[in-house]
Image (tube, rainbow, N blue to C red):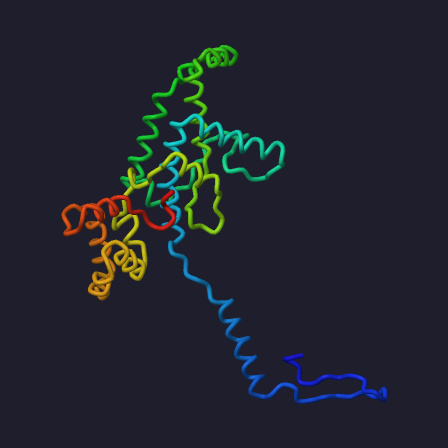
Length: 275
């Protein structure tokens, strides 16, 4: 009743009684203002940290890091596949994190600029391809299907485990840890295997800093260098700040900072990339 202007009820004589003026005019205005503020808050959308294209790029770097780790670890790949198959078969889940019953390679769509210009991504893919070339695949060259199957069956247990892990690794779906909908299995596997994305990927002006807002660059600089630096350089152009951060990340040992800071900077990753 706090927002009503009157109350209707029956008095002791059975007559209809109306009480008016229960809400003061100034209270009505306050309620209206609160409603407007709530609507404004609901309709205001928070700007995402990364653009769609940058998010896709970062997903790919992270995906290739964990793929390599899973492909080299039979136990993790087996657990991941078994979990997915059990949930699909016995729980009836429509979505499992790996394509357990369809083991085609889950090729994530690369942004156009990444396919030919991104040297880091190309290097990561080449490492994986070299790994696959060393797998025991001679049996796959046999033309007759039955003979091919028998040749695979004759492989050692170790070789079968290597093949199994490689196949499972190629079915993994990419994600960043700060997305709205993330699979905890992906994150846990990365932690269990101690996947360190910074060992194979590092931030540059072209693959990260040049694609972020200036305010985000200053925030990163404040995190890595300090408040004084951020205040001093807040009026610089975005490109200048991006180029400075690239040099700072790639050459920390040339800066006047402690050994502890150097190690922190070497392992630094943007939000959503670390495991």
